Amino acid sequence: MGQNGEGDNSSLQKTLQKMRIAFVYDRVNKFGGAERVLMSLHGIFPEAPIYTLVHNPDKSSWANGIQVIPTFLNKISFLRGKHELLSPIAPMAFETHDFSGYDVILSITSGDAKSIITKPNQLHVCYCLTPTRYFWSGEGEYKNDLKMKLIPNFLLKYFRTIDLLTSKRPDKYIAISNEVKSRIKKYYNADSSIIYPSIDDKFLTVKSIKKSKKNYYLVVSRLVPYKKVDLVVKAFNKNKKRLVIAGVGSEYDRLKKLAKGNISFVGHVNDEKLKLLYKQAKAVIFPQEEDFGLVPLESQACGTPVIAYAKGGALETIIAGKTGLFFKYQTVKSLNNALRRFQKSKFLEVDCVANAKMFSNISFQTQIRKEITRLWQEFNS
Image (cartoon, rainbow, N blue to C red; front, side, top):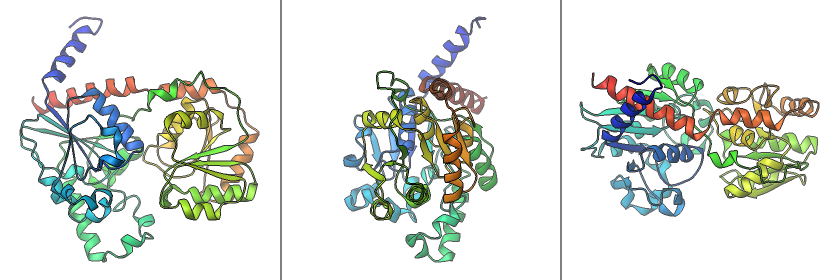
């Protein structure tokens, strides 16, 4: 091997070129942070197909040009947008996929994609977004969901048991954060390495956007209960500061009714508009506990600090006092206290951008290439 590392890189590239790789993803019927991660992974292995539960092309234009292979359930078009109804049989459906001809199968999942069956000569690596949230770390929150309330306890215990059984199917786990690594160990009793997801590099190229800050704070989120956007709305109803909310979801109508006149909703926005919103906001509010969370990094990439709840992945992506600050409790009082502290603090755009660059796409893809190659060589040794 050359002392400059060229030999190592050459060997790695040759190993990767020989691998026949397939992806497995929970469902291809929406676009969000997880889909950004999947796109970045697919950029490393552009020939790899994506096996999934259901595929709704109308809601997943990001997958145009990629071979997407859904299960037999996709023949019922109604179910393509109602994947939650399929939860009881999703593990069985994933078992019907045939991976003949592949060396490495990479499942990207926070649910059932890990349920696939592989052969002894195939390496199954799970890039775990989190152990199935509604069974484990988010069980308490989901108990208040109407759909979960309709499921008898004995069935929930059965489904949880199935999740534990299928969690043994991956040969290796890669976690997206220390938070998720801890959950994998706690709930699945499995070890994992850590590779942080990347942000889309387009958020790091916003120098052409006018730098002047507008007099608003920003939330970027799917509007669903666990994202805690209602907490932000209540806090800003009280403090009267200007708030802009970008995103759509089941909570949209309820939140609009709850919000006072200082709060505006802009719905779904494209990336160009999103970059502008990030760049010109005073700060981004991140009130939920996430497995990792791309929004804080996208905000920092645009030079904007973050005010975040002090739990989960945000603790790994925000530098307290330098690129943002934290509030300890998910309460109106705690958040508004953090806003008062924020107004007395100074954050530099250059610090925010420098931190975000640590999570660039190039860094992510380099780490994934090395880890998959290492695991494959270890698997075959």
